[in-house]
Amino acid sequence: MSTKPDEFDGSEFDWIQIRKDYSDQPTLTQTEKFMKKLKENPFVPVGAILTTGCLSYGLYSYRAGRPKMSQLMMRSRVAAQGFTVFALVLGIGMGLHNN
Image (cartoon, rainbow, N blue to C red; front, side):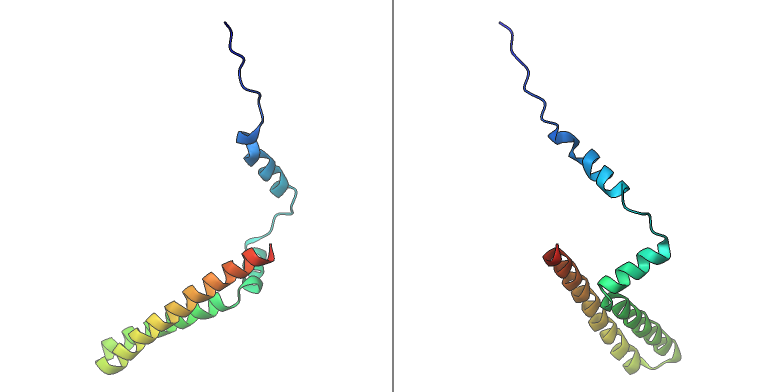
């Protein structure tokens, strides 16, 4: 009794085709990639800058001995981080919806 092996369907090599599809696209420089992502989702860098600004000023206020301002800035930092996460999720959702 001989058993016939299953037919080869090539499904385990789908990643090769995907790689070929992407290799046909022109390569982008880091600046071009950044600008493309910035155009796709402009609120993420805004949120990151706000978060960094709140954190920096909050730490400065803490070192300067102004605990109320430091506490306010740390709370603002959490709000800015929430905005950034919301912008990321929104951007991903819009990207999936467009495709």
